[in-house]
Length: 113
Length: 113
Image (cartoon, rainbow over all chains, first blue to last red; front, side, top):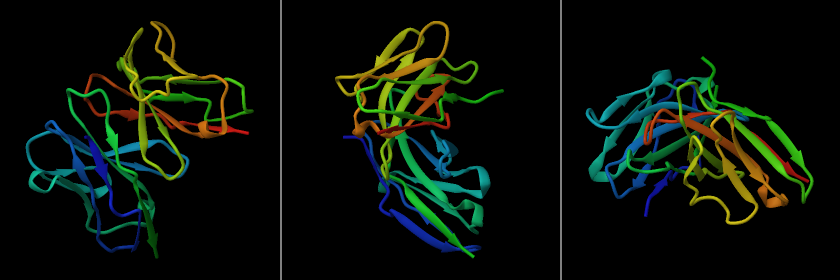
């Protein structure tokens, strides 16, 4: 069965600290992987995506993610968090042969000064 | 270049009324997806449409819910005889092709009172 697990419901970090959000997936085909960010009351904005090739992908706002096939993981990282990064982060998996993406339940990020 | 446009942003309906949610995809996108986000949950797939065709409605409740994407005009998600449990954020996304990354709209937040 296809699924995405984001083990951390809520994370709090200090501004300027590094960040890693975890994502594990289960998918029967070669996965396409995505990270989206959602600010309160807003839609989802694509941060980055992995389709193939280099397993370390760079996204917007200084985020990066690494695809590790052996661990079925696609963790999101940022070396130095800014207060404006406070939001909900969703990991998603899909495929070019599929009709839908599967989303995790999200990780809520709080940034303290 | 307008993004995915959803309206209304907020919709309040009394139990038993009908709700109509509209989605205009990005220019050049012919694939539309509807997702529902319940409070503190991730997004759940509802339906995938192309112009005049429902491709996959495996996530749609069997009763009261319907979707269309006519040749002209926006995609419509229709919920008949709404109940309190229908209260959620409904997001539309579009893509230029199957499996490509989505562009999300800002969502319609439906409240059933």
